[in-house]
Image (cartoon, rainbow, N blue to C red; front, side):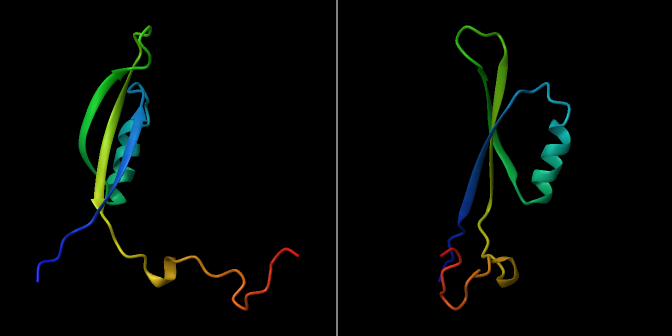
Length: 81
């Protein structure tokens, strides 16, 4: 049986003169995101300022039990009455 890998995607729109850009990319890489492509676009038709849109992907992972949100009301009572 073949297992099909599932992916999740993220799009980031960034003005490229951001001095934190490289550190931000490092953090995304540490979190498993891979840059797949990018494209440059003007902010608006009348502006010379450009932004770059970055497209990232990473394999979808099951959420470990320890990372799943806990039920804040395990007995089914209303928290706010």
